[in-house]
Length: 305
Ligand code: ATP
Image (cartoon, rainbow, N blue to C red; front, top):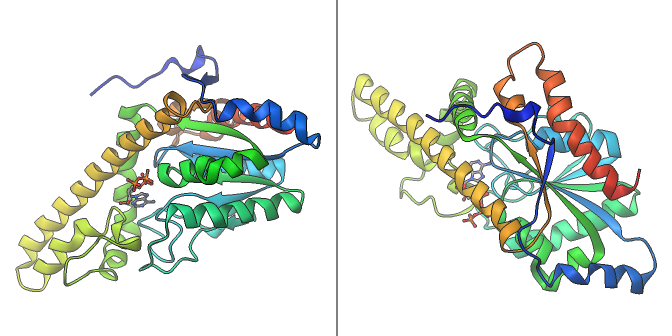
């Protein structure tokens, strides 16, 4: 395994990543000049699963009177709070969350439906004088929201993109730990509720990592001995860990493509130290100094406060 990345003290807290310029975004100044009125603002908090983006979005919402639009494509469905790692009511800290559930688990909620609904929600949030904060790692939802329908959202909203990034070795260890905690909290029973005798996990919330992997265990459980079933359960849990680690890598690559291919200006915030030191007494301070403070600066620049 690679050495944990520990260079966070000397690195600049925020790294702006912009690798190409998309002509689509270059017409922004023209828009501002022609409309005269200041544009509405929207913040995006992007990051792979496990990087702490949900917490960051809530902390930013508390400071900037924000409301959160969830853009995790599995968390939009009703159900599986443990497996999809939905924020709890306590964690929400009174901040309204939109699209955290609400869609039927068997439906296939498409990226263009999300664009339509999230755009209206962002308009309503802005109309209440509050700041829309879009938080989640789903590439297809984010790209469609920002650039779909001829860039309508980006025409209406000045957007800033915060990318919460965590070094691999640290994230892998965190993800494995989190899966163990999910098992303690009831992952198996949650997945059992979606066990499909036909073995079809291609629609809706059934695609969530943590559901298809359990299929073999549920089939075996009733017919084989306890020992054999226990071994298969262990294998399923290891598979869930491996699939989640793979997902975090794919999500990271897709986020990087927002900069390299779409030309979006991503403000990269390194949350490695915060994740690495999450169990220490100093965890809260490390989070505030290395993740929250640089992110607050980025949002301040956007909203002009
Ligand atoms: P794609 O369009 O290929 O699905 P995407 O970048 O839009 O990619 P992701 O959010 O990366 O979507 O999700 C890809 C897959 O990862 C989902 O179909 C699901 O299997 C799994 N996944 C994503 N989010 C979660 C989650 N919160 N819990 C469990 N599994 C998830």
